[in-house]
Every structure is written in C-alpha cells, then in structure tokens.
Length: 286
Image (cartoon, rainbow, N blue to C red; front, side, top):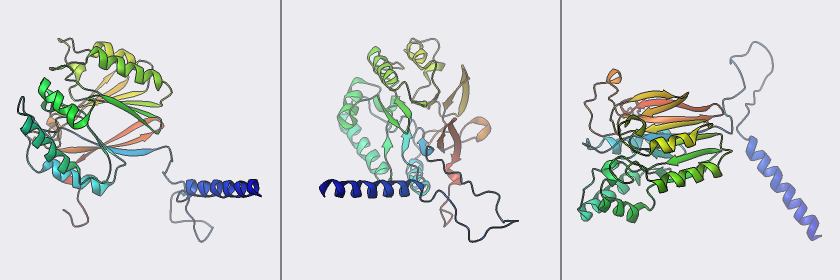
C-alpha cells in the first residue's frame, strides 16, 4: 500500500510539473478557419531563453539621481537579474568611514530592486589596498563566477592589483571555472576596464584572453564613459556608456548617453538592446 501511495504521488507530481512546463506556451483560439487575424500561433517563448539587464558606470563624476532613476526603470522592465561593470561608488583612497558611508548609500539605492544585482568592481571602488579590504568586508570576493541556464558568467576584477591588472591567482581561478564549465553554451565576461585596449601595459589580459579560445563568448566592460563595440577573432567586445557617471551626453554619434543594456540570451547567443534611460517611461509617462 505504501509503495502504491508513493507511486500515485510521484505520478501526480510528474503531471503537475509537466503541466507547469507547458502552461502559457500555447494560444487557444475559439474557432478554426481561414483567413485569421494573426500571423502565427507559434509564440516567441523558447523556455531556454532568458533576459537580464546591465547597468554601466554610476561613478567617476556622478550626476546625482540618474542611477537611482535607473533602478526604478529596472523594476518597471522586470529582468531576471541585473549585472554591473563597476564604478558603483566615487570611492575614497584611505577614509574607511567615507567608504562605508558610500557603500551604505549604494545598498540603499539597489535595495529597491525586485531582482538580484551582481557587482563587479571598478577603479573607483577598489583602487587602493584600503579600498580592496573594504570591498572584501562589504562584499567578499572581488572576482567570481556563476552559471545560469547553461550560460557561464565571469565577473573579473581589473584592479587586481591596481592599476589595471589581473593577478595570476585571478587568472588561475578563471581558468578553473572555464575548465569546470566546458559544456556551457555561452560565456559572458564582465569587467570594468577594457583591458584589451591597454596594449602598452602588462595587464594580464594576454594570459586570460587565450583561455576563451574555442568557446562562444561575449565581453562587456565600461570605464570609458563612451559606448563602442569591437570584434576580436569573431567575438563581440562592448564598452558601455554610462548610467549616471560623468558624461557630456553628446548623443549616439559620440557614444555619450545614459542607458540600460537589455540582454536576451538565445541559442545563438546574446541579443543586445541599448535602452536610453530617457526613453523608458511608465504608464504615467514618468
């Protein structure tokens, strides 16, 4: 009797899961015939796709209120989570109390989000040993990785140590993460400084970048406060503009604007949409 009960419960659970997996994926129409007032009933709702957002530099000459406004707009758009590429605070080279105050201010700002926020350090966050220690106290590791829906996310620290460098320990960590996730369908690399542009310095990039060879990957960075896109060996490398950091805001042609990047991960890789903050309005046009 006990085995029969377990079987019935297991079957019921299986049917429930199966039902949940298909709920909302088809359209039921009350009639069949032609012509019909729609183009197709094959909805664009691949269960393997997902959406997340990226915010860029808040600091480095912060314009107050812009980053805060972006948080409200993120809640309006409802991504699954939010990534960053550093310069989240203005920082202070040695004043720990001021660092702590700024991080508390940052926590209060992102605390309104209805989804997770993943941090990446920038030079304004972690450019001295004192700042690096405060980061560890506040947030733990300054570089890390995670995997979601067969996509590997690598979050780098380009101030390891300052200025503009990846340590051997960090590169070894990333190599291990890549080796352990060799079957990931795509790899996304998040970093503050676009190290591939620092060609006259030994930043460690020439030792890290080859680790990505043979993989599907995309690199996203910031720091320049100026939007650009490059292709290296067939892969896309982005430098984002700002989400509140200093900018002359001369517009698209100059790559100077405040934005949120909306990413839809598909089987063919990330689909990137740049959403200007001024164009994201709620139902009251605010």
